[in-house]
Image (tube, rainbow, N blue to C red):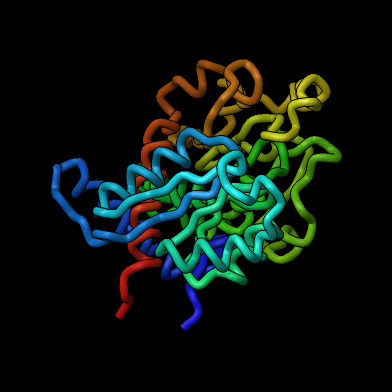
Length: 303
């Protein structure tokens, strides 16, 4: 039987995603209670990092250890990937030695190629196009604070980047309306928008996007690999900072999320990210719990 992969949120059904979130909350409660639960004893996770990381590496590695397994960190500097070995060959070899593989890389095509040649499940831990694991954590966090996000309104303010793309998929899978505000020239992928046109509204005005929103989300203005554009992006995105004034246009009980790392004074003001509507620290912690649920889902038999 072909391995089950998680490259985007569309690889699971809406029902499977909701079951995953419920399981993540259960695993979180177990971990907080100190319950020993090791269903992945002697299983090995291969972690391929072409992009640096804090939350992704620690959450996957700690999660695998907590589930009784082990994780191996692999970077281009200390593997043949960095010396030009074809992705297909690396996938064929690694998938004969480990039980599951997560990859954090640049081009989304790389992870699709890797998955096509892998015998074991492959998890997208971030590409330039999608960041589905972060959305699992975000949706878990909203569920914990406000219940089902179905029928709610989410505002995305800033760059139409990989996080924005995964929010577009989330709108489709979880049944919410997504209002996107991006500067001209920085809109999300049009094909992704067209596929869920009924659920997504795009403008260049943060005020329009945030008005009445239940959740406001942003990300850095210059992602990894875009550092040389930093000064230009700061000028273009300046009107898109999530400020206390902007948050006041959302619903009174609206939450604020950011996948981190954050640049206070750029995409978000300090008063917002450190304020009472911000849930970024629970959001960050939930990377651990939602990914443990994902590892369990992909590795253990399902009935």
